[in-house]
Length: 214
Image (tube, rainbow, N blue to C red; front, side, top):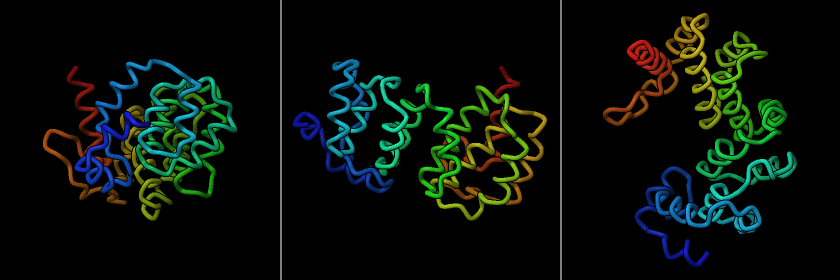
């Protein structure tokens, strides 16, 4: 904890806080600490228990994803309110857990939009990697009906799912693009030069173009 405190940079903290992340540790330096520590599940659990955002991010880098029970992961998501902690927990830990599918189904239906966004993120992962058994047309219907008015983080997760369905599944591509064009979600999102817009019709079209170019 002392080492993390020493790495805290006020400028980095100010930049991170604009995105809801209350820590000031450069992520590259945090990853360097994790690389030195290697996998240490007990230390990861202790770091998570501090409730400190930088410590929790480090915990997610050095833990053993398969060591957590479903109730533990459920409780961890419930307390992971910083967006970066939430994202790393889902992407670095839950996706590698044997409980991922059970949690996907439970979180997808949760009334808390932040928890539901995790369910959508796991669903998007399945859209790309294991689509068998998913009702893609049904997902598009839910997105069509609910994404426009969804809270920000849930809306972002639904939009990612919309784009991924369009990118990975040609049979649903025209409908996905049509939904994006009608809802206009993230149409005006500021995009850095060289980056692809998160506006689904542009995102889908660009990623499909890249696939055909390779």
